[in-house]
Length: 498
Image: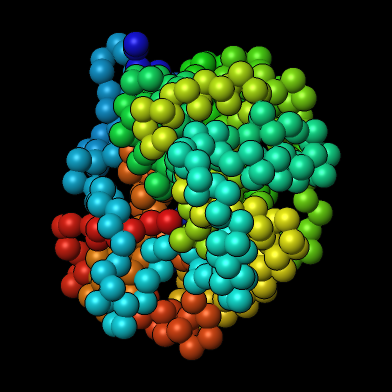
């Protein structure tokens, strides 16, 4: 299969360059030369994922006309980008964006923080909160009470316990999306669900369109299945998707799958509006792309906001959208219960393929989640979880604004993460320096494709109060190390991201 290459038109690139913030000035407040400002603008668009790596840029003459500058200015900017490793050109063929070979890239290791480090290291790598009590204990006790009949069976339920499938289906129906239990497969967390979907729909070499940035662990899972990731830049701020870009990618790249997080996106916190949801389903249907919608953050609404209808509500025939849900973010990561909502024939195919993977999800955990959802305990626990995450968010935001006033971010109205621009510093270098001063933080490239987002880090709402304040103090110390050159180690940290 030929590698798909995106093309950035002259008018599109000109709009993106003009939309950027004002260019940095030179020594003494002088503006840089026009070619240097243009080169810096393109470089920033690549590093922030606004222009994909390996995208074909417009010809010098076309961009010069779109920007109303001389062709000499564009030629000099392109030459500067080539010299810095951000552009590759072939005579007669054009120029493509690139990332320098020496650009720090994220480590591939996903190991959790060792237990012996918990006392000395503040872990901002994992966007998960401790178990909510007393609901966890109550759920496990309720599950134990209901376990005896199941203990007399073989215990293998590849599609999930019938009772839990019915409960999950009823919840979708109550939300205005009629659902039968035959449309539900219970999985071992959302990761298990997406892994099963990728293996069924996207064989080695298939293209998968992904938001840019996106959830790091899912990107790595897809890479390991042999998929070719096609990044689609998010809209500005927290306004969800850029539908023009999505239409272009779905039309031109014809990916087999597209993966999106519509509800309090990980890592940006963006919430896609209802029209964007409708438009994306229509575009995916027209392109013949299966749309995988990750709803694991859906329950974590931290501020008053009207929630749009679920994406699957715009696919009544069930031919385009596969919905993935999970108890791990809203309740507890240690409760590895996820699910897929899809057409019955898709569920049957997923179940059949599962027989050669994990056979099924643990019965006791399924009973615990079913008990919670059936008794009202789920709503109570999730409400407590929202309050805790809101308090942590507010504490972290205040601490970062105080200790790191040049860091930029938009405060999301839900989810568990803050997506932060680090004032021009390398996120990978900050992650290395952070481990030296006792704070673990994942760098931006973990959430991008091909080295984008070097100027970002992700901060989760997992600590609050004095711990959030100390985390910000340690991040400020890491900034000082990077600026002094002491934090410029070659290896990126091997931190866990969840």
